Amino acid sequence: MKAGNVQILDQFGRPFSSRPIYKSGSYDDGLQRLPNYLKEPEQLSGNLTRKNLISASRLLYKNNGVVKGAVNMKAEYSIGKAFLFKSLCKNPEVAAKYDEYIKAFYKVACVNGKNFHSLLYLISTAIDIDGDCFVMLTESKTGFPQLQFIRANRVCSPKNGLIDSGKYKGLNVLHGVITNRMGREIAYWLDGDEPGGGEIIPASSILHIVDDDFLSTCRGEPLFSHGLKEFRYIDDINTAELGAMKIASQIALVKKNETGEVDITQAYDKPSNNGEVLIRNTGDKQIVFLKSEDSLDSLKIERPSPNYMSFSERLLKGVLSGVGVPYDIVVNPDSSGVGNRMSLSKFDNTTRDRATLLEDAARLLVQYILAVGIQREDIPHAEGWWNMMFSRAKRPSVDMGRDSNSQLKEYNAGIKNLTEICEENGTQVEDHLRIRAREAAIAEKLRREAEAEFGVEISPDYIRKF
Figure 1 (cartoon, rainbow, N blue to C red):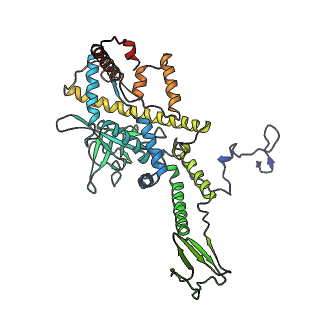
Figure 2: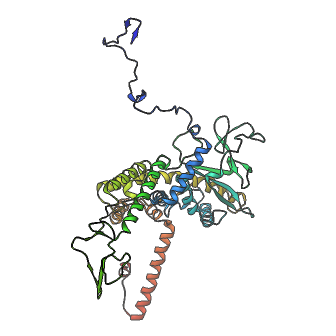
């Protein structure tokens, strides 16, 4: 660096340079200049951009098996047979009533008749497809608490983008989310069925569920937003390859001759489509007669090529690496070895993270159900009525036998209890022990009947073997 004719040196006597220490902080003439993204996340995408992302994501989910498999597997392994409710109320008798009340609610949780597990499944898939979703806290005509699932596209900003009247006049509204001056979500704009219609729903009556990447963002983004363009490339390439393979498969045989044209003078025993080849049937076989200079070959099909397969696999792996569902889990689940176990470990972390998000949402929803039930006097009020726990789904495995033996050893060593094992299988420990006790009672009854019938004594230990 020079000031006039004077050269400025650093402490080592070398010419001073103002270039940043990170090369990525400076621009290169050979690269595309990057725009400035130093804004709040929700300011980087307008309403149209967000609608396009959701539309493309839904289209991809409906038409791409890899995407649909990744989204569905994530939901299935996160929920499974788990999320069974257990009240931690200090009063055991009241806690038992809470358990029965929520058990009945689980069967018909939504206004459209879907059960609670189906609602959780819809929430998980909607988060990955649309970026977020909403659940309205409502009631039936009789006042019984119910839930209503709302897709992301129903919550959007009004056409003018402003709230010009009412309680929320002058407040910020972005992508349908109304925030106060501190940035807290206080209400949502719910688009109406008729053009120009809509209503404002306070945040106390609706639950916004989002798996966001930034702390300050108000709406989520589809899981495959980063790979929508790659999947469009894959779809275009697949269409072209399928067209080429279809054309090639329609060509059964290739006849070669000197002219490259149909020989109309050649005699034939059996008329063919072009009157060119002599074919003689001998039972279940055919004999084809050609001139000495002619030949009849089959078309060698080399589509899809290895380059195409490796390139498509490369694109898929790159996209799936950003969603927490490894390529081997979705596309090649039969693979084995250390690599597959590492992929399974990554997928396990993804499903556990999603289960934590769903558990937080389920806790808020069930607390609402209990609160309304207490208010209606369907169930009694007790201290700590809001304390609860949910069972977790069984972790994914590549070797069920090995994991079962490991689970048995952990139980015998006291590391794992019977409650945890039962909840992983989607049952309550009370129900499991009740069934075991009933089996023991039936076995004892049959033992006594057999002793009376045959006049011999049967040891109870013999019955326990079964």
